[in-house]
Image 1 (cartoon, helix red, strand yellow):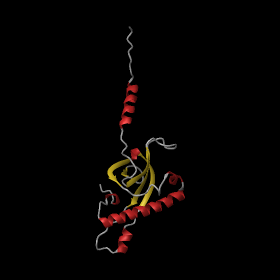
Image 2 (tube, one colour):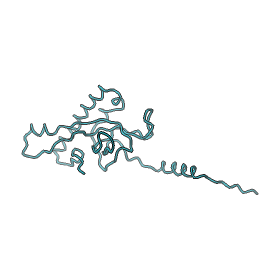
Image 3 (cartoon, helix red, strand yellow):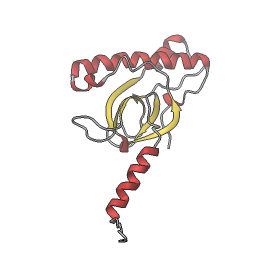
Image 4 (cartoon, one colour):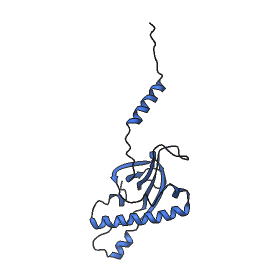
Length: 163
């Protein structure tokens, strides 16, 4: 009877462990999750994931997501302000971006705004469609902010990140 020995190299062991770890991974970067942008022009800004691509796509072969975020936040509003002033201070400037997963930090918050119908993957490549999508997303975010003002609930997403 011959005894067959099987030896694995370190690279093979690492690959086996990686495949086992990837099978157990839970997806926490889902649609509606609020993230903080870490790199680039919009670093420090809050954004909402509209669509995520875990396996990557044709041009981007890494995990990435399509986000809509706030470039210019609404200003502080107090009770003594009139409706005109409140409307003027409630303006939001959004941005639409495709970001690498390594360049976003997830938060525990989620935003249930209907941005999926407004923004899609085709918008990124077409400049005119992007501007239209930005104006539509601006309207959606401003409406969401107005409802939060009336209800008095958490306005964390619509406040500047202080650090």
